[in-house]
Image (cartoon, rainbow, N blue to C red):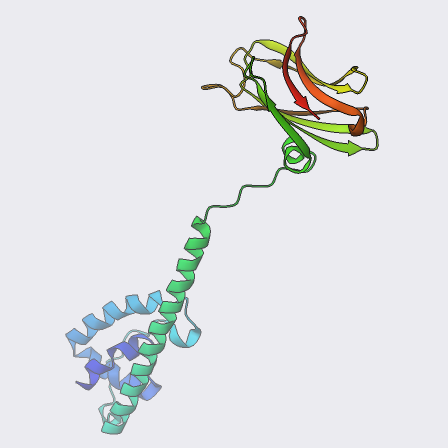
Length: 234
């Protein structure tokens, strides 16, 4: 039974030179050990990612020359102990490797956080600026306006939905004296924005030389007939 016990240690390259020669002598005449060795070499290949002492290269083809007189009871016990320790260490390494791979898979599959809007965008302004929102009960248009004071005047961002087309519109800022200052202009396609089966809400930005402290309200107006679709207090 000595040779049978050594198959795993031989496959992992753990036998000392003299013990390896003795086992090879046994292996040459033992078909069961050769079959077991062929199976265990697949296990040894799976341990390539473990530390070098647990992942020795595959052993050379067995040499028929054996040295039977090297086998003794003391040597068998010593080799059994070493083989047991190697199996425990290999199993622990596989558990750690499996845990690391599992963690990596978890991290890869974790849903990423949505990217923050780029600085200078209308969405970024709508997220961080001073905002006001309103809905017009007559037209159904709803919108949100955000402002940011600048040295040159006021930067303005706007999000509109439930806006039907086709239209040509403009956003104006109305000052304390009632004068309108154009902020931005755009065209609305026939399908409109922010309606069932249409593109999402319209988001745009513009600016006015009017200081934000002088703006009383914002109005979305149509070009041509000058209708007011939405009024948002500043």
